[in-house]
Image (cartoon, rainbow, N blue to C red):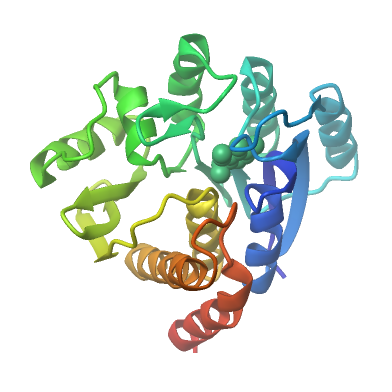
Length: 275
Ligand code: PXL
């Protein structure tokens, strides 16, 4: 069985980061090792969330794994709570990256043109450096703008997004920009170093937390099942879209996505292409 490690926070309630990555990647038949960076009572979309920084534990945990000679088929990092945690994740990658595995970085910083609470310019500067350690990066449109120092707007055209992909691919072999909107279409655009690939679905008029985490986790699950990049993107977008639609139809104002109801769909899509 393949084994991956994911480094991000535990938002106890809210259906983001580890509480999404663990079930989805496990559903893809992959052992999912977790390295929690922070424990929050909820995701940062709620008021007055609690925040317990686990930075001191990160080197203790990773040193134990090194001592046990544990290795991973992929390293996936998501929300990192502060600059120190970016440094700790970099050290982790330097210790566990090898020629047989790959690193997926979701440079979680913000959404819809805004930074998440607690992040500032210095955090963005550190993230710009950090992403060079990723074989794949999956910023949303807001994060792509932050990484490139471009002012955010919702309505970039195709050529502008392609230019962003090319710029980001100077440091990363494969780049996927999520949350790209063209009229009533919403989806992702990617570049793998030689080819562009885009995949869109109809836009559901909602802004839920955790959609990027569902995308990154399900993409990683597919890639570790040796599904090619384009098919993996398609499955991840479809699974995310199905989950968002289900949420919109059953509880428009939910604090998180009903991805649980579509896990079976995700597994079946993987089985169909790996048969
Ligand atoms: O979905 C990304 C994410 C991860 N972790 C925390 C968050 C968010 C988005 O709001 O608040 C704590």
